[in-house]
Amino acid sequence: MPIDAAKAVAAEPRTGEITWNSKDVQLYHLGIGAGTPATDPDELRYTLESRLHVLPSFATVAGSGSPGVISGLSMPGVEVDLAKVLHGGQSLTLHRPIPVQGTATATGRIAAVHDKGKAAVLVMRTEVADADGPLWTNDAQIFVRGEGGWGGDRGPSGRLEPPAGEPDRVVERPVREDQALLYRLSGDWNPLHADPEFAKVAGFERPILHGLCTYGMTLKAVVDTLLGGDVARVRSYATRFAGVVYPGETLRIRMWPGDDRVRVAVSAVEREDAPVLADTIVEHA
Image 1: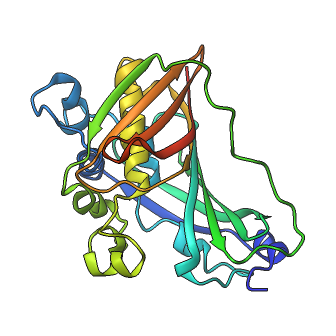
Image 2: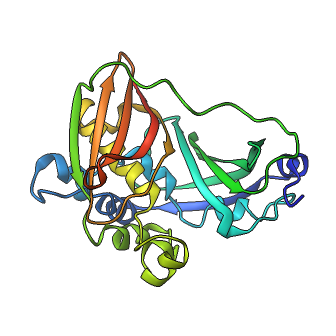
């Protein structure tokens, strides 16, 4: 079996130093659609260095050379075909607000391997800390098609009961035609998001938007709509990737706020509200 679950989980973590600065933060914010209108004071918090704050989802790209999905797929006990790999979900826990610039240590490991029958799920965990202590923990849930069925633990179900009733808030966010080209400058160079021929080989009619770009766009919409634009209020953010987005489409973001969390669902307007993000929760102070 290409995946040896026990060996993968027992493997030594991989550690590396990551750095980022205000330019990296601004580029990421522009890549998820910030800066429109360009002179809006609320948008300047994402684009102007003298007012800059950091949207927590920046953690998914900070120090793009840090231990991540590709590194995890080369861990001991893991030997898979990249063509069978899908990014199934992402969760982020914030231990404190992310500084505008910093140097930190990122430690990556495979935290769990689940047997879903027709697929294996690798939980790739990255923990980041600087000189002042822990900053954030990222978990990427990676589906590997055709690698299940060895009788291992199925793991927890990520499916949640749908939110009750109609959403309290609904906003729409356009995805620019060039958005994937801009977002990839933050470190995800997969040609699936830029090369039409590669996208066709992968089974798509044209390049698709990065799932983590949609992830960032959605968190920004929640922060701006329900949290008063205060990025420091976000405590954690988790989602399941339920479908693709094509550049030029429009995201419809539905929100059901509670006392300390917001349930969210995201769909593509032009494709009859095809699901994009599901089982999404933003926990906040």
